[in-house]
Length: 335
Image (cartoon, rainbow, N blue to C red; front, top):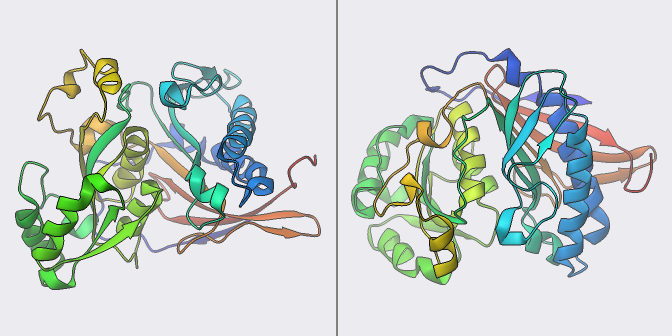
């Protein structure tokens, strides 16, 4: 296994002390996402998203079964995907080691994998018990910025004001800003307002966890992420945001009556309630792991070799926030 350490982001978040308890899970979590990524390879470009997702779920669950400690899934496949495995409340692990809560997306970018497009990953985040925001909601409005702009923006302000504040925090004019927005009809007005304010928009189809990393990592090509995406992905992204010293706000944005009913009674589901980073992940002793499935600008696509499959992963812990890891796993069906 090869570990390549990226520079530590400037302006790290205050109050994030090294956390050896949860950080000790980083390597087992990495092994689990690597296993899930390799299981997806036979399904890349086959136009069968359910088969690809099923392979990822089964492989990730198998990998997490041996996790040292007791791990409870609080963000999983859930009602949205009617998943029988990695559901909210499922308990995994050996029971011998630190307890943690998990937020998992065995295959973020299912359609990307099915279509053979860049950006699909297997991703897991872990935090101490009760530290992750567990919601039945499926969609969340998100605002993500990097370390240099932490504390400058708010979901309670108009887009135009946020762009001005973001530009000030980054020390560059609004016209030089690039904002990542998911390419969805619901974002037509947001896209228009960003462009009319003078900033550029980088549209992406799926995979807002990786889009968040494009905001957070040194040398990333996005200055902010805005818009409505998956709520589970929002909680997973929040772990990376916290570890990498950025800032994030979210608020649930139900897109159907069924979803509104599912979050009825949740305090954070009230109209206008904004969730800060501490609400989304309440403890800095967390872990974020993502392994590439189809490749992209941040992580290379897995490559088959004579002794296995070479994988590329990003790992972040409170002790080591920026690690690129190259590893080798047996091919799907082997070993």
